[in-house]
Length: 146
Ligand code: DQA
View 1 (cartoon, rainbow, N blue to C red):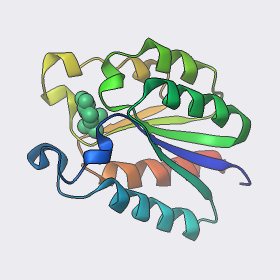
View 2 (cartoon, protein in one colour; view 1 turned 90 degrees about the vertical axis):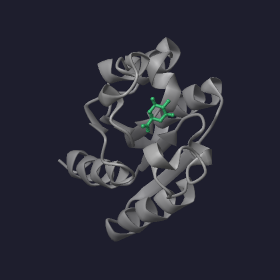
View 3 (cartoon, rainbow, N blue to C red; view 1 turned 180 degrees about the vertical axis):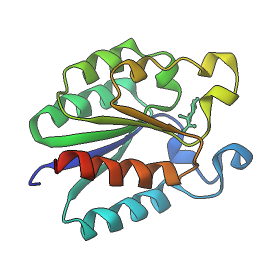
């Protein structure tokens, strides 16, 4: 696999570690990035690990992924529940997309139950904490090498 896997993180995920630890745990986004980079290295894969609080930046990264990504892992955070624009951007991407949520969004407030992004996701992982990223990455590597 010569292209990248993008791991895209949406708003407020830069605050992991400080943010509602009873829901999201104590690990930081940097801890997640280190875990993902280890797996990528082991599998000889190039990773772009990204986070933004701005919707347009996430959309631009998804557009860029069309050029150089064999798959996307995305935790769109609160944009999951609001952003048709991110769904539309993902609809332009032709390779696998795995949606990750640290928490089980279906066990939480009603407004978190719908994710627009899920309409385009190949698979969804929710409720496994930060391990969801590891599961997603391993499965995506498997899918991309088929
Ligand atoms: C989240 C769940 C979303 O509802 C929330 O807005 C987030 C994080 C998760 O990873 O569990 O910011 O995507």
